[in-house]
Image (cartoon, rainbow over all chains, first blue to last red; front, side, top):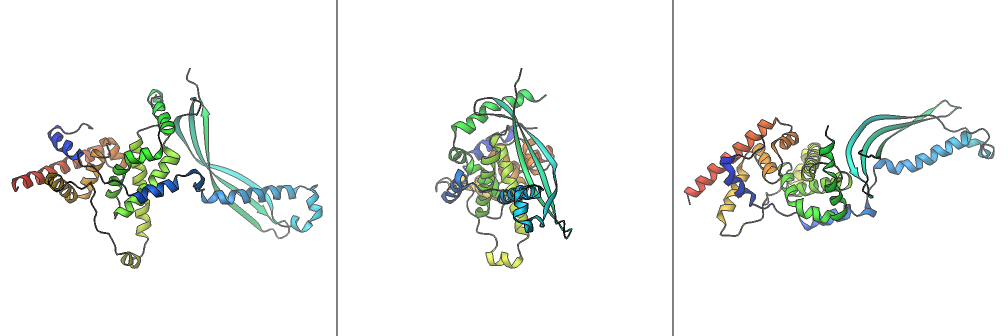
Length: 145
Length: 183
């Protein structure tokens, strides 16, 4: 299937002498910008992850009956409280073997989750659901013996 | 079991990550990727955008993966080109008119010298090939893909990819022979 066609070998060789146009300097400059580590862009949900985690931590902390903050600021306690959190795995892909920096072979598995957290206001019974995609990459060292 | 096959890729991955910078890689593969991108985009500017997106994606997330790097890069280029095409179809007709539509076709290959008429004739003949034949030819000759890989890229049976390649070469040879006869 994959062998070149003998009758066209000469034409194929001639075609290979044609050299594709080199990309512009502007493209190289854009790549340099895009691949500079400190300019690396984050996925959109990454910007929400930290505030959300902080809010969740605060919510859990405030939900504790004995938390001093409850006494100090009862108005906050009456607002939304986290009532449920779930992680749904919707895809997992084995990306095969990679080599770690120390030369150890490892297997890399990429998993995609959807995390859903639900808050509820106990007074009004209003609820708020927050859903965010999450990607997890696991690198597991392996040994071949 | 595919383990031995995958293990053979590890030394090359080490070489990729440790010894070579993205600039080296781009110098090596950039022209081929741009040529492939031009088969699937409306303009050379779009092709460069697609190559940028694909190369950044490859370098950040895929360069350590086992497999043939150029094939992975071409897959990334095609995916980016399809994404761009989908975005383009959502543009309004008015916006397209304002853009002036397709830009002027620019050379796909390094310009031959004035006396190299043969190469100029070849490039012109390539440009006249049907799109579906030319993309297979480009992926085979400059993308260095096998017919199986081309078939996977274009979602075709491998035999169809091989047939298109043969049609393309036949048409090219016919044009070049005619050009030779007419001096």
